[in-house]
Image (cartoon, one colour):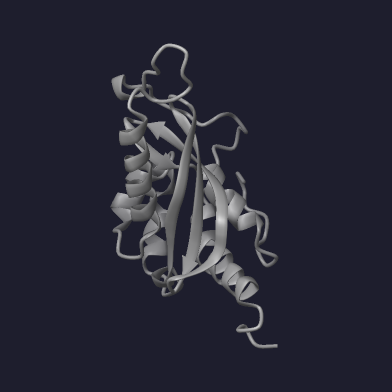
Amino acid sequence: MSSRKHPRGAALAAAAVLVLVPVAAGCGNGDGGEPQTSPSPAATATQGQNQPSDPAAARAEVEKNWTAFFAPATPAEEKVRLLENGERMQPVLQALSGSPQAAQTSVKVENVTFTSPTQGEVTYDLLVAGSPALPDSKGTTVLQDDTWKVSVKTLCALVKLSPDASPVPGC
């Protein structure tokens, strides 16, 4: 059967295996603990709320950073800055930047809901060649070093969706 009859399956395989497996190879902190976050004045919750003090600004930053992280043209150094614990992932991200398959993958953030002043849930569409491959996907964002970042947990979850992905240490 052609991939046109099963576009979601073909897109999933392309996105998860060819693009995300190299990134996730360095995923995880290995201890199964919670994401490490650095509270900042911008992340201080107003009394009785479970969100940043300026949710609109935080949402805009999440959308901007997620879009940039998954954008093919974003340099590896910038992706390091936009990924939770990105310094550990620098060699993997640099290798990914040269992948021809990565040049076709991007995301469109649909919604951000904060679960705490330093964490949130993101609904996004994973796009391959501009077409939704995984619409309404769920991921998490974390505030680390005063920057809203794509969580390692999100990348690892995408990798685990692929039937061709081998076990990845730390995921």
